[in-house]
Length: 429
Figure 1 (spheres, rainbow, N blue to C red):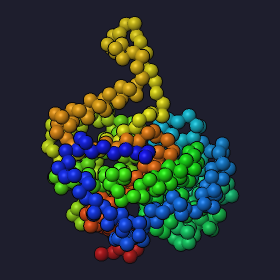
Figure 2 (cartoon, helix red, strand yellow; figure 1 turned 180 degrees about the vertical axis):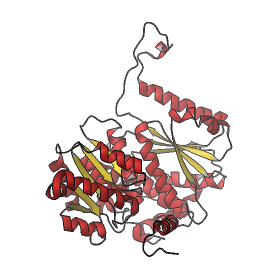
Figure 3 (cartoon, one colour; figure 1 turned 30 degrees about the vertical axis):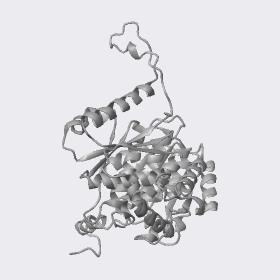
Figure 4 (cartoon, rainbow, N blue to C red; figure 1 turned 90 degrees about the vertical axis):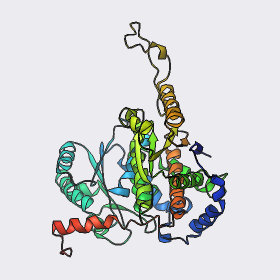
């Protein structure tokens, strides 16, 4: 089992095992695809049912473009952006030395941001991957309009079509029509996998592959999780134990979950996790508010509240056993900073001791429940595995609330108001 779950510091007042019958019922519902939103359960069998030919096209595209660009611009929002960014930063780190940078656009209306992106890439060797099922998502469509003009001017129509990749619907939508018209290579967003579950599809795999990530290993990890977590036995399924623990803690009055990491390269994984849980669970007046922090950094800003503030939250620590890289602390003859007691130690060891000390403080003195999820490393296989872990945990924990984990009706409300204010045809009041 790649990922481990520990609830021994969770102050749970109910036994996780007492939920076995409910978990068995929901597990069957998930795998037989009979629950609410079942038309978006394509991810359940994706590790074995994914399009192998399309996957090979992604691999070949990455090989063809390798060495021909130094900047990848990924244009998308929500699930069309967060998963890819989480994967790339987790696996490659924040400052990789592979000669490629990735920039994310189409996720904001900020004029300053978009202007600076266009200025930054004007002398770069650029490839654009635009990701949108409909092609009309406002933030993404506006950014891509500007990027397409930039690419046409920089490379000409013929040159641009070799450098623009569309990930979109298989048959319809404005982006699919444009891709066909302009001759962009395109990949498919499956109809039965929603945006926040889509990182394991071409939505995430294309930018990952372009950034030098071995997507075969990602899929291997995904398949391993599919095989190992395909059991309703709570003794053998850490994802389901996590799902049940969340429900128990909310029953105890904890309505905020703080997802805690100790690696800056996992901050976007936290953002992806927040969308996955927040958009899946936050409806019908129900759900736990997903929050996140990166320690030890945020201990110097949020630590006081967590330790002694109002008891509204519990923590879920996402621990990494082995860092991608490590450094040894040097000795200093002057010892002016009084750090020689750590000379010769690895910095990751210090990081782990900070984690242990913080856990002890928050649990024993602060009385803050802590759940712990452990992953061996931040490599491709582990990323694929953790995706399925959180997908299946999210489905379980949401169905336990008797809500649809796969829709997001609330996000449409702001869009209608915005479209009216923008004067979009058909949205007059």
